Length: 159
Image (cartoon, rainbow, N blue to C red; front, side, top):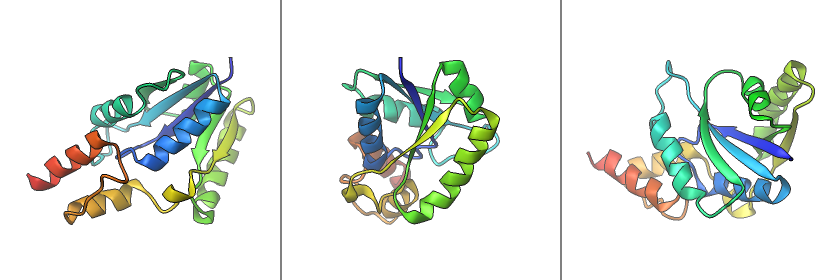
């Protein structure tokens, strides 16, 4: 079975993330979307919230499952039986960091490959940080995130 892991903070998940998930699901037999969390770092949304948003967003994609992880990605990938790490690249500016991470992961476990996937052009500009900023200022984020996320952002910023 060709199994891949798509890790990220997904804080919050965007339509760009989901586009990468759908592309990966066409390539691999199973895609594990892994919400990274670190108890010492506070995210905008909690890890359970981010996991729940993703569960809702990937419903209907049969070969995708969502989970959480903490620690080294390669160790988690190995434990899950993954042979590839999916990373989304929006722009050249993403590449330098992602390239360094891919090389480090390769050094830690040469059997796990990193696959770079580009989202649709419609989502190249999109990031979780930008979505949070738009929502913070009362902007409409419906076109950028799943409905459950848009509602959660509205609740957080109207409180």
